[in-house]
Image (cartoon, rainbow, N blue to C red; front, side):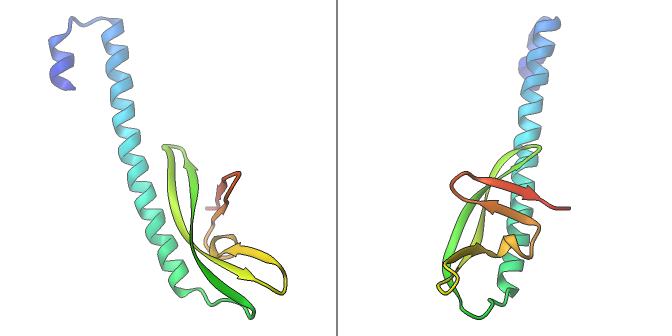
Length: 110
């Protein structure tokens, strides 16, 4: 990228192109780091979660999280309570990483 820019005649258009390339590179890197850190936090929370009576672990569910740097997947444990006919992920209760699959709505609570 720097080689490309240095080989160009400096003008408004090339500066604008450079800014777009740098922004894309920075956001992709930041998005990957945020996704990695939040997945690690979700894994720690899921590992220590104690299901409520009647809840049965059904497996992992992937939700999409939207942050300021982009979208990334978060995998969460998924539980079902037959008596209440209710599906739930640990995230809705304990982690601050809340999501809804299907419509994919995710909220980060800081």
